[in-house]
Image (cartoon, rainbow, N blue to C red):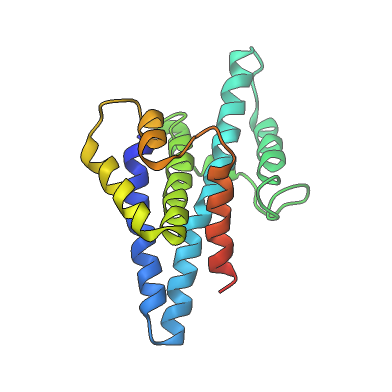
Length: 180
């Protein structure tokens, strides 16, 4: 799911980036930049929610049941690694109740993390080498699914899901928008 989702997320980011860059009105530019950053920064929320969910499943799998207070502590500790809004004395309590995928599609949230990292990674490539990116991306889309996604990503886009350069490229794109 993360593979095809990354194409949709790239389209969303491209549209928002175009609206941001092409707007003539300062208020519109600020609005679209805010939307662009909100969309891109979802990677952090999805990441900590995925980690919390995995930790809950790991605890249950190891025979340790967690009550609401234990899940709250786990949420605050984990989310604090990603956001200053969480941690001891946080006003953001019971955030673990909110993500509907915890209940409707267990362990699915990690797909959003990978998809958004890929979409931002594609944008990083597009910003650095527009012509080369277009060629590689179109080849990837035209190829179809004759191999697992990680193989296709490596073959066509030079992306290794296990390499930290994917995260570094995503952060570079976000930082560039923030520094505009």
